[in-house]
Length: 291
Ligand code: SF4
Image 1 (spheres, rainbow, N blue to C red):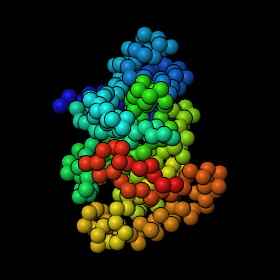
Image 2 (image 1 turned 90 degrees about the vertical axis):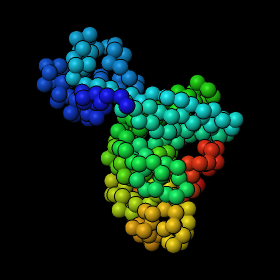
Image 3 (image 1 turned 90 degrees about the horizontal axis):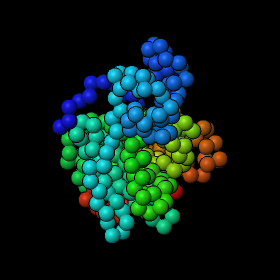
């Protein structure tokens, strides 16, 4: 396993934090905005790509920070045009992402954790130990890399993103929301929130939190069974988040005024119910969330 880089990851800094730190090093405040743009708009993976910064500032950045980009370890191309990739993280861990081209959509299915703690019986990831949460930059990088695959192989950029790969996104709440904020921000990748779907195995209190935080992306619940006894048998999370609790949380999610007003202006911010992909299936067996 790769040795941990002890310099802080610059992508874990907010613009405000970066501004404070850089001015503390005697740099002008506007440099932080330039660096932020390199990181989140131009997806720079090395400080030397930041060519509008002086060599001295780039040297300072290298001394104080690291960028921990995700790289493609291997890719498998299927006859149905899906591309499944293993992504290598800075610490040597691997996660999976899939490009799913269909007639109308170019969808990236991305991961939110290394492994998963929920152990759904139908899911290969559930047999893996949950090692850690992905950082926002690692979630963002999967989108950038899969978009590169889409453009390179099919000449079409991504149209949709689903957080339906390894891990339960709602158990990595802060980093997932930070990543989506960077994906959707005008000073980020500027992807429309309605193009993004977070898929959860069903954690009622976190669904309520999504509503309270007034998120603007879609939500998919991996249902798999419509009665508690059956669902308990295949998804242990159901034992502490029964169907009635999930239903109440989903009703709360859809009933808040802020969400209703979003739906009026943006029809694709509707709640989605979808079957989650068993990891033993091929990616082509995933259907798009039902709107
Ligand atoms: S289906 Fe999702 S929540 Fe369940 S074990 Fe697999 S990755 Fe985890």
